[in-house]
Image (cartoon, rainbow, N blue to C red; front, side):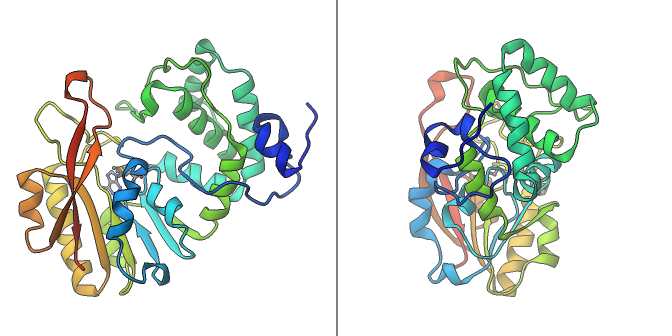
Length: 298
Ligand SMILES: C[S@@+](CC[C@H](N)C(=O)[O-])C[C@H]1O[C@@H](n2cnc3c(N)ncnc32)[C@H](O)[C@@H]1O
């Protein structure tokens, strides 16, 4: 395959054009590199006006990073991103530190993609010894080709989502990966639970908390992001952390579903509503807009 590295070629023919040898200047704005359940991409226009004044001078902290839509949108010069999903954080580290190898691997995976190939890659991802960049490329490939971009693992920690029904999934977007890599180079990345914030957050930080949502009804289940769900006790512990960071002088913004339990937890703080498209619901009759709370301490 012949590589060319002019910016125009890079934009037009992403798949063929990336030169693994030459460092590139990002040509597009950074944005999430994975589809993520609960991703905030479609809510950003409603969330931006709710950011604190002078937020650009603050360190940006996201303890539930996921696809990190807010981080990529804000492009902070200092950031701390955390998530309990080890594979997600490892992927960000590889995209930040070993992008050429990740892209080379993704080019190969994209070229060979088929429904059958998906299951080979998934099996290797679950059982084979892969390098960090191979694993990150497989993570991105599986995310782009699996059913609904879900991340679900079984009890043994094996990724078990079936292949999605996409005609031509966009598996490799080299320009976007480059932009994300450059933005991630400003970030401290950690695989840790939100409780670690008590040790990590500093006065004057802007902290955006976007935990797994409290289900709106007993049948809706938005809690299985990693191996363990997020219980009501977790929501209560998170509220305690929120109070602690409030006392410390952090600026706090938290998203959750608009249910009485959440309103009660944060009744001492300012609560605004935003209208969100319902992300994933097997029952199509229940798709539509749903309101979410944004809890702020400023
Ligand atoms: C609603 S998603 C965040 C979505 C993100 N804001 C975005 O734009 O894509 C919630 C995230 O919290 C993570 N998570 C679940 N339990 C956690 C915990 N105890 N501590 C930190 N992160 C956790 C999940 O892995 C998931 O990525």
